[in-house]
Amino acid sequence: MTDYEYIMAQCRKYHFTQWDENVLRECQSIMPNLTRDELVGVYRSRLLGDRHPLKQTAFKVLFADKVGKREERIKALDIDALIEEFKDKKSGNVALIRKELRERYKAGKDKQKIAGIFNVSTKSDQQWVKSQIRKERYGDSGNNNYQWKKPSWK
Image 1: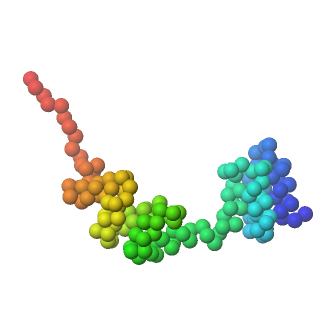
Image 2 (image 1 turned 45 degrees about the horizontal axis):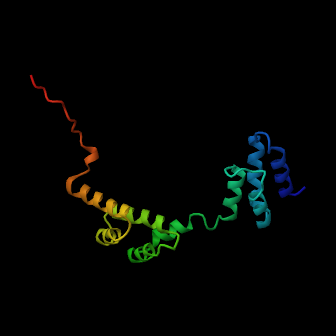
Image 3 (image 1 turned 90 degrees about the horizontal axis):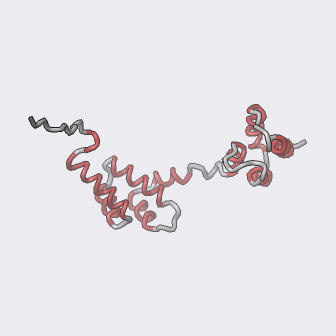
């Protein structure tokens, strides 16, 4: 019995019952030994639910070289390249780039460029820049210890 056949037999066995933790860990440990076609077979199996740990492990093994690479590439880009890619709404990376731009703004790097691109972007980006400027000018209003007290009129 090959590793793939063993995993699929366990999937059939535990389809209607709860998985034994030891068997699940064993199946996960032999996943890297499977071929790409076998991994795709496990991932597409109807015997496993969408959130099943075995399905998630198959995905991670299939795309191990791509998981995390996009974030690393975005963090390594300079500000001008980030802005150009942020303008390209079809790149698929807009949300990650927005997050990186916000982190850089908070760190004090290239604030003018980031504020400029956010001011011509979506309404939520414009609001975010306004709130950051307000915090810089007046301080963080969420951290003050002032409490309103009812006046005592006697």
